[in-house]
Length: 186
Ligand SMILES: [Mg+2]
Ligand SMILES: [Zn+2]
Image 1 (cartoon, protein in one colour):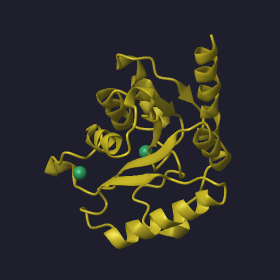
Image 2 (cartoon, protein in one colour):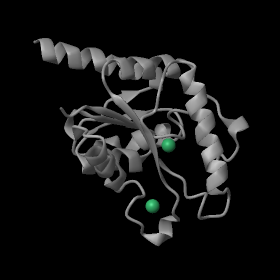
Image 3 (tube, helix red, strand yellow):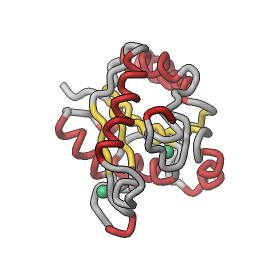
Image 4 (cartoon, protein in one colour):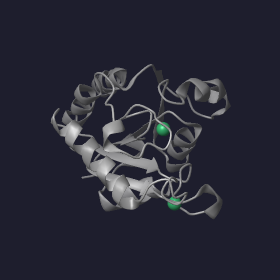
């Protein structure tokens, strides 16, 4: 049986946006985010982070420091009973033309094969244009948050070929779950 996933961007989505955040102490979980991700998880969604971290190749922080940040994120969310299925990172510089950096759908497609995910039942919640484009190219449903860079991204939302739900914050995205249930029931 294929399972749906909730793909999540990291900065500006599961943690408050700080450019090139490099230390665990800088991490702040948005209000209501833990409770919201628990609801997605309980609804049967695998939670998978997909994050561009070019700060590694730019020399702003090391892979070890990145690991420490991710451990803190995992620990903070575990307090809410939330378990991330995986955290997939592109550490490359944008100029390298790697295959994994969003808006490339590569990491979503790889995760979907590895974890038997039904992409078109899945969502990607992000705050940047690269998140929306990655979702569209992979075939899952993009969702835009107005946190982080979302207030700029929303200005371009009419350029996309699909309708994109917009929310002020992560906690409000659980509304999508009730919509899915209603569709299944009707
Ligand atoms: Mg982001
Ligand atoms: Zn990459």
